[in-house]
Image (cartoon, rainbow, N blue to C red; front, top):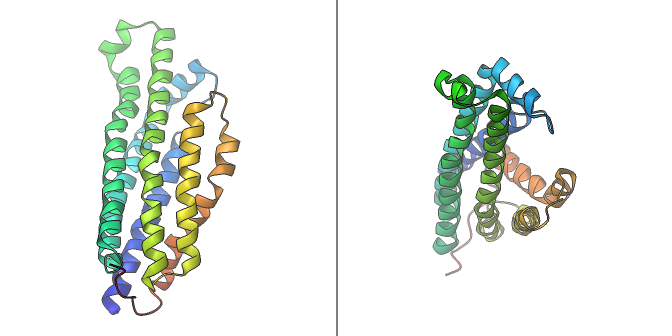
Length: 232
């Protein structure tokens, strides 16, 4: 059981790193320089604060590395319930992380456009601003594509948590519901042109609660009792 507690706390730490570095990159580093609806101001702010934009880039990569290792630790913790569901959990995250890592090229393209002298001489300032916005939008949409797999991973995680005897069943249920709210948000974003950020936050609210609850439980409590027998 001590080994299970250590695994749970390591998983909680990795989950916390995913949340902290991902939040910093999206809600601070990029939010500080992106001015919605103003191409010139956005390009100007990024050019004026390249260090912050690069820190956001590195923060995203740290988040992705942490996310890569997270399901591997959870697999060790929860595989006794159902190895097939545990494998699905790992594969979903691996695919999602791969998409996010490739998508980071769109983030770095902005840096090249604004700081590479050869490229900046090939385009007018207005064209550079348009390309910057284009790559930022590609980067945002790339995250949305990865979201498909980060929605899928929540169902096996919730299922395994619910049946494990290690984690409160309430958290398991929230995670499974969070899977469907994340997937709903994914489809609404691509199907509805005027889908707003406020609506997206409302749709994914249960997912946020579920993941924060899981992270805090693993980090603070670890596991609560002996694991159940495998369902297979």
